[in-house]
Amino acid sequence: RVRLYLTNTHRAEMYARLHDFDFFVYTEDDIDISVSAMAAFVAEEAVLRVCEGEHAWRLHALAFLRYELNASFAFLNDTNRQRTGEVTRVLWEWKRPLSKALLPSALNRSRYLRLSRPHTGAWMGSRAQLEWWRTKCRFDLPTNRPGGVHPVIGTQRVWMAGMELFSQRFGGCNIIPVMPLRAYQAFTLHHLANKNFQRVGQRGRLGGNLPKVDLISAHELH
Image (cartoon, rainbow, N blue to C red; front, side, top):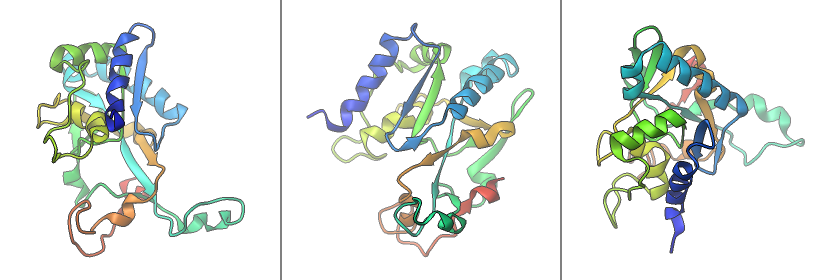
């Protein structure tokens, strides 16, 4: 009966052990989060608070872009490693123009990209952030996805993996997701499934029945 609502238990565990750790990571099970990504978050979260000020820190939180590898084959191993030249990182969740999807945002001292989509598949937070989010929006108490039997934003897993924290609608916390430009590569995460990019434009998936989409590559983002 628990099924996808098992994700709720992670939030309770985080707050039960809030003073045992310096920062916390929540991720769906198919996101590749490296040590370098975690180190970048710790460093940049401190920059956000110290350099940008307490007010900006309360309004914003560092967030991630997901990418997939647009491979036409199922897997890579020693037998076909030469085919990596055929593969490109694609940001399948974002549409052109990038200037509207990823909004340049200059805070006090640094430049950031403001992400227009609240679903990130993973989020991180320092102890201080979790304490603030608890005060701001009772983040310590998991809420159910909006929409009841017919959800309007996906599964409970999707709601917990960034939607609740960053959404301005449906009773979300309305924290503004930003990504530091100077370290943007560390804030791109691999969605290991490498399958959603193939669904863009199909009926019922990410935009309806549309022609084949020219996906944004990581090179274009750079």
